[in-house]
Image (cartoon, rainbow, N blue to C red; front, side, top):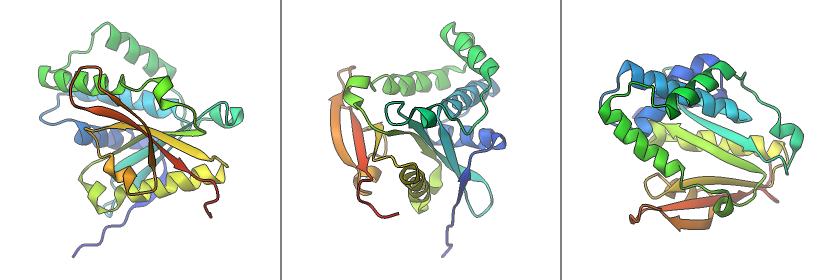
Length: 216
């Protein structure tokens, strides 16, 4: 039986392509065109650079198969909230937002349909239901390795970082279309839930993890 081990380390710019693949394989299916991948890579780059820190996990073959990001609240620590581990590429930001909102990306029909659904899910998060916390767990995306201890390895590194920075509360946004049970089993508790605005049976969730009193 093969043993899976994951090396978790800080994100590097060279990891961007693999992180793009992780997100695609987690939320999308079917073929992806060159233009689809370019858009998704620019989308991921903006996401990672808006976060204060990102960790990636490598599998036995030294391939990045997952990543996790953190974003500090200014109310918790202004210095941390204004410190970024990843260099920002504002030119990419401007190009991505300009092309996206003016619908200038030549996306394939199949990918565009799926991305529109993915983006609609993200819009379910609102500040009122999310509430306040010290640190937001922004993204945990991985491919098939997530059932082999990948998610746990990334989450443990994330929580160690949070505790070292003296954060007490960590929150994340997820929904019934994602693997929210993962957080149920790892000490997170549900603090808010809300039906999707589209009238479907899906719900969005906010989970919180308290680091108060937990040993390092």
